[in-house]
Length: 407
Image 1: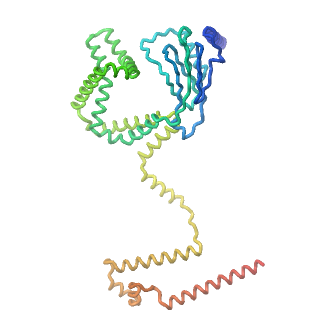
Image 2 (image 1 turned 60 degrees about the vertical axis):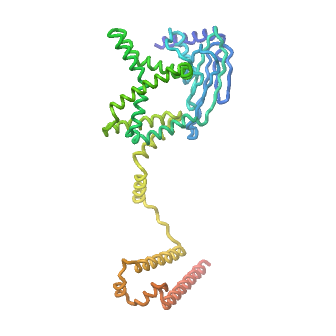
Image 3 (image 1 turned 45 degrees about the vertical axis):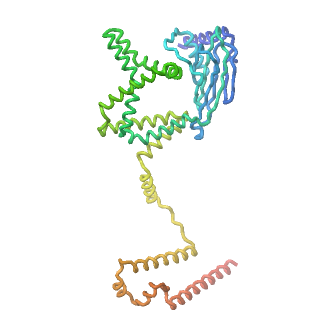
């Protein structure tokens, strides 16, 4: 088994070197590492590999995109992608040895968007019998507006799914859009009915999805040309298919079953999360956005406050002790607050003044207090001042004793 693998590897290397010799290029000139802002011009036919090394992931790079721009007017070239130059060369070797005939060839993309957080290589193979001059450049988009819109759109779709699943206008718009999109499949089925039973009908049914996907791709890539040259046909096609789709939706009617609405809501929310996940090459950040949306939607802010209060109850914070000055100020503040509350209660209709008077030892003093005088008498104030003076003198005497002991 080891000998067979070695023979295959030697054969692969021999074929690759032979191809490089025929195309007049060397391996040293065929591999290039690009950074944003670099530009390399190709002047020889054959396989050229352009690579970019992965960069570190940071949250500010969530919507970052790298673009490899292939500047050429020709379509007679082959493109290969991979994570390493070896993978690209293997794909090129397999493609050169295999028999290929592309029935549905379309225009190749010259703007290649790559993941900046992964090692990526793009191989371009040009034939020697044609014009093989081209230029490859790399552009960095720090904040891709399309990806930002995808993230915002996914979030809006996720949070609006419940309303949209119960909205009649959304039902008709979705039905008309799907009707236009799948009209090609209906056309294939109708043609299969006209052809009758047999191998031709099975061939049409079997290739229905392939034909539809290929036709959609061709229409998308040549949309501007089609809209400019066949705008009347395109207008009538969309008008007729939209009208038929609307009539079908009107005949069926909007969804009334609650479970069906719930399923539509779940489908829309799953689509929103999928859009968010696909809106960034930084998969960890996009996945965190999905999880965050899911948690906030299913566990609202009230649950957060309840869990916070439960946590404080289970693990209470250590109370901060007051200083002597803070204690005195708090006592004055709380006393004045309680006295004002007492005045307000006694002045309110809820209070019975006669019962209150009967319970008091000195109603005249209470009446003066309600009229704005102090709640302390002159004798109580003088005793309070004497007590405060005595306490201050004791504190000073105690401090003097401590100072003498220190000496």
